[in-house]
Amino acid sequence: MYYKTKCILEICRFYGILIKMFFGDHVPPHFHSEYQGYKAVINIRTGEMIEGEMPIKQLKLIQAWCVIHEDELLLNFEILKSNPASWKK
Image 1 (tube, helix red, strand yellow):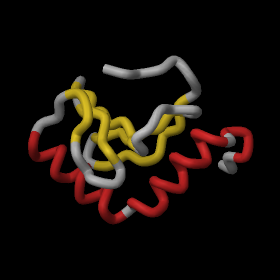
Image 2 (image 1 turned 90 degrees about the vertical axis):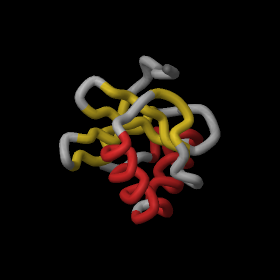
Image 3 (image 1 turned 180 degrees about the horizontal axis):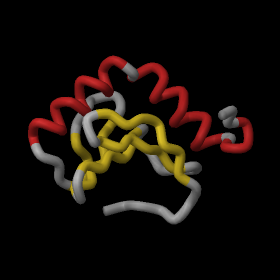
């Protein structure tokens, strides 16, 4: 699994699922998710699991959440990739 040691930004938590992004991460636009020891990388544009494993129920929740928040996730990804210093908490 491709996890960096760079700074991590927690985006959201719901139903025991953690959503996060890394500063300066690689393309395609994606986020990282964790649930009870499972880890997965999710493509923001397609909702497809790029890497890792996730129980199907949680993966469907993550994919639905991704559709709802796609615009914000893409904006966050671009800011964190290109200019992390401009990130506002």
